[in-house]
Amino acid sequence: MPNYWLMKSEPDAFSIDDLKRLKHSPWDGVRNYQARNFMREMKEGDLVFFYHSSCTPAGIVGTAKVCKSAYPDHTSWDKNSAYYDAKSTPDSPHWFMVDVEFIEKWPSILTLAELKQNPELTEMLLTKKGSRLSVMPITQSEWEYISTILKK
DNA sequence: GCCAACGTTGGC
DNA sequence: GCCAACGTTGGC
Image (cartoon, rainbow, N blue to C red; front, side, top):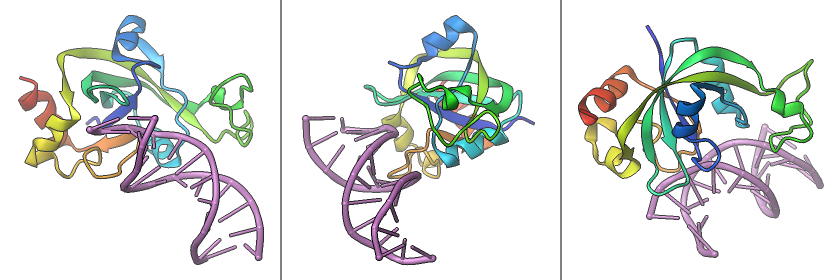
């Protein structure tokens, strides 16, 4: 059984179209411990909602799957990277990434406003006030409701 | 651009 | 370990 996740990206930095073009990509630059811990729980074959944040409108734009489980994020010890963190070294990595593979871009975005309107989804971390996590778990029922009911 | 909410840092 | 100050996220 796969587990289900939601991952946020600013489309100006990395969009679902970028992932579609590349077919698969490392998901680097996560610098939040809670998000990192969720990524370390990810297994190959886990399914991911791809979410566009900091844009208009924000929302889920498609699906992807985990194609490589967590491994050290080398950008964390690259001094030329915007994601550099002096605490992280190759011998003692603090930060991790997974690789994700494109599955599908939906015909239209499922906006945050629409998600918030659904009583079935009020327990989602995403729709909670003040939630800023960029990587979060999704329950199986939420996954099925969103991907099979809302999108069909 | 604003700002609420949250996470991190660092003095004590 | 507490908590004020600061930095960041991300919707609006």
